[in-house]
Length: 448
Image 1 (tube, rainbow, N blue to C red):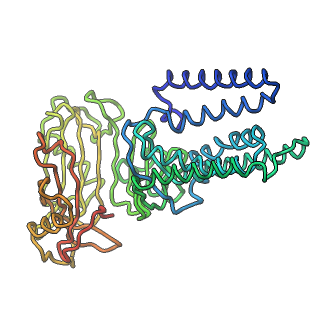
Image 2: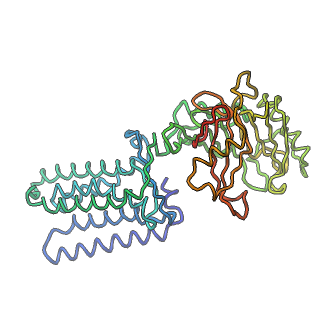
Image 3: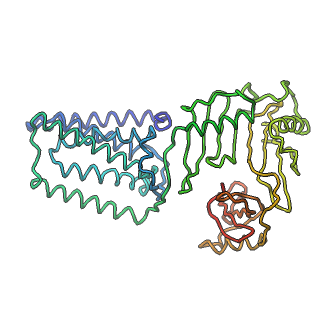
């Protein structure tokens, strides 16, 4: 996690360290000159500079999202490394803050308001652009409270006198007022989204079993060992309890939709130069591989590992990057104009080995599927009416697919919107909407 956060920011880290030390030394000399306690306040200054530098001034995307997530699961950050580190980070701040100021109410106000203001600043100020997450504020506040508690016991044990509540009432009220003003300025311009979880979590035993079965199906039993320490679960935005499992080792990088397990992707090789990381099909190399040869090899593999491809109504072989990365062989099944859920894509590199794999699970045939009752034009019109400025968009509904929601399969149109005037429509940013072809209901969230 530290590598992901600080990679490529060595100069910035050095500047932050220098700044914190310089300000701490300056504070120490200034307080010493006035015959005041200097060590603890100087340490507090250094700690505050480091934390503000990491939370606010660490280089971000440069553009504030104006969005903040509210995590329903208050216990979730306690189960993640990131959450625990967020809590530990502010323990010394609360500890040193109380001992340096000797003011309990003022320190309490700062411990509670500070993390909230930092998160809102990350969401609303371009210079501080980072992810705004209620779990981060939660753990920062708890860490600060733990630090304050430790400082209180330390003060009592050493006979240190704290300010009376009456003496610190005014600065505490000023701090609260400033916090309320800061929150009041940031909240109106921030969109809040309630979610079930926000942090990347370690995979569970149940998730490891699912990933192992998918890899065994794709490449044979024992192809790779699933170490739970390398398996991670990343929740998706929204309150649907869905997310993605990630696994990586020296053989494969794999992803799986969770909890549906309907989508599985395995990446073995990223280079246009074939390597031993790619997966052999027949144990031979095939230089100057043609599309027909790639299709034959992929079919040999698919029938051995995913027998349901025999039901496919379409098998295509398409060159990838003008053939530099080999061929993509795809299996699709269409019944009554509806694309079936079961799909397979196998990328064969230039020597006849598998470099990429994507599987979408589900039936390749339905005995009873609700029939479509609306056409493409009505699906597009449904999406058009739901948007504030449809005149600036182009609409396409090229796919009618059987999808699953809440355990039920229904035909849905996938309606894609693209901003008009895009130089290259294929590369332009697009948004997908989903319209139930049986009921006409519009869904903005993707299916399972």
